[in-house]
Length: 443
Image (tube, rainbow, N blue to C red; front, side, top):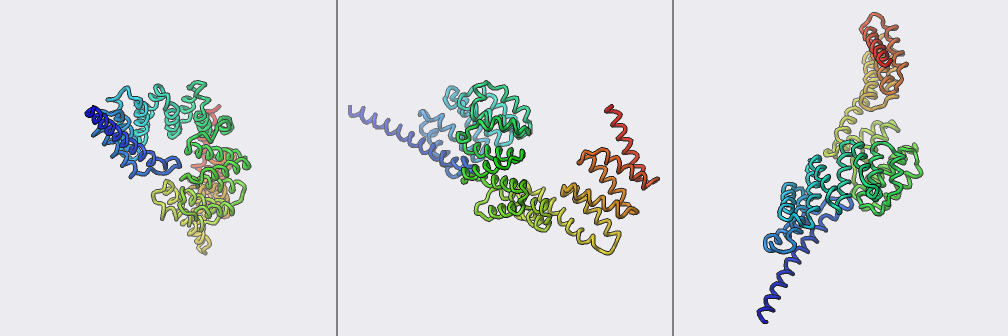
């Protein structure tokens, strides 16, 4: 009896030991990934501890009931810390050595997420498709991942087709309704998107999906000019998601709403207030939009240049860096030419005016401003080479941007009439022949 009691105690202590080890590993993992709920980054130190504790299960308790749990936990921890090869190896081990494990579907799903994180989206999509067909627990999540992969590649038709292939029961799922609305939104079908999104219970979505829901709803209301609902949606999103790492993207939408209402100074004031707050996220987007408002609506090119330059000087890793760099160079040249265009050197003055028109159109996307400048050159300096050049530019702009073929043709005819027997009239005649040929083809 004494030996039996000792044996029982040893077994009990041993089982408690590996249970406690796994419990701690699980706890470290949950704490390590908790920041993801609000769009933040994982706590790598805690995930490393989870890997360490889980590895002890594999090393010292290889026959325990927690081995497949530990493998999954190690794989997920490696995935979130960016060690993708190690993560895939652990998920593969679980699938190979424990094919009947209750965690096999989890391993397959997270293997797909790992491939996605390391940039192999097609492999990931293939795996998620398998998960959709075999897993009850991860089916909706796998559909979500597939749809997002398709949308990332601007393939909203394929995403819509996937959703349409689902059962009626799946389509009534709150997450699927959200995805349906998201796909319609990305495709530009805003009214159809609202039919799905207004049926979504935002409070039952994950925090990140809920945050995205308010972003999408606000964007739709802005684009459909429903400012009252846009304001309500934006303010509600800001109130609910104060802790979300990307919360300031909602402030960006609010600035857009103010601009739509022609409250440009208030938009600038809002952006500056948000940028002054500590821990600002999406800082580059806020700074860029501030520059955009100064440039496009307030015509304050000096302050616009200051904003764009802040991204070039400070936010070098920003996705907006290339565009901001172009803006900086264009505005620097624009400001310089604007000063030089008032010089007494007439030839230099006309050349600068033409370059200003070119910059307005090609670099700053100010179509109407460029038209005004080209027209002024054509009317005021008819004896210079910049007159026919401006007319060619006007013909192109009216055809491409204004979709006004008649005015485009009129400028070509004006070149032929005002500059006969020149290279400009010959080129204009060739363009007119192209028009006639295109019309004949359409007939």
